[in-house]
Length: 229
Image 1 (cartoon, rainbow, N blue to C red):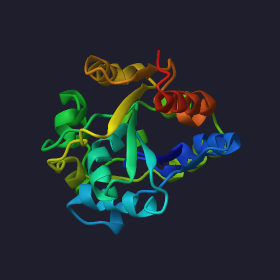
Image 2 (image 1 turned 180 degrees about the vertical axis):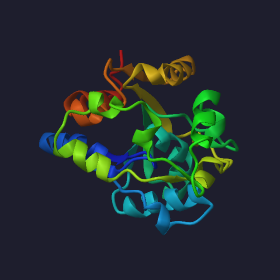
Image 3 (image 1 turned 30 degrees about the vertical axis):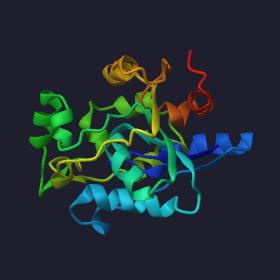
Image 4 (image 1 turned 60 degrees about the vertical axis):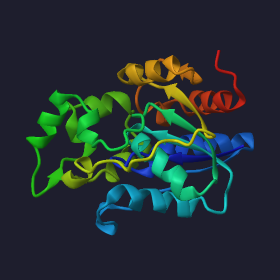
């Protein structure tokens, strides 16, 4: 059992650090590939980001690909770029694949309009600025983990959010599962369950892998083993 823990393009790789450490203590191999910074890639962004992950896990096949939040958009492109190196995909509080559609088309109109109104020089504000003041502090306790997480946040090119995802979906021979961490992703969890996909729910929050790493790690293992209630 090997895990590749992929962070959202809107945040940094440190969000998976605690889970990777938990897996290491259990003797389970795991890596948290870092997506390239925006100034290191050019449009089209989806294939560039997917290729970067595929290259980082090329010597680790087969892996269970775990995608968090906005990285759900990258799941199918990563699987395609990995060329058979992914055995299963787990969406952790993540948006589901949306081939041919933009990120804005998956978001609520209210959020989309709010972000467009904050665009400056073609950039959307850093992720923590999408929410009311104090929202992140209420989720992540003060300390080095939060400091590192915040230090990794940058503005996001509007062009990425307006780029249509590649016309790709997960291959039929790749199993997938859904791990809901917060109520905000209940709709996605319901879609997964409605399709007969293994689904687990934790009553935590969107960044639970940073604060409740043991629970998240156990849930991921259970989904791989088929123990999902």
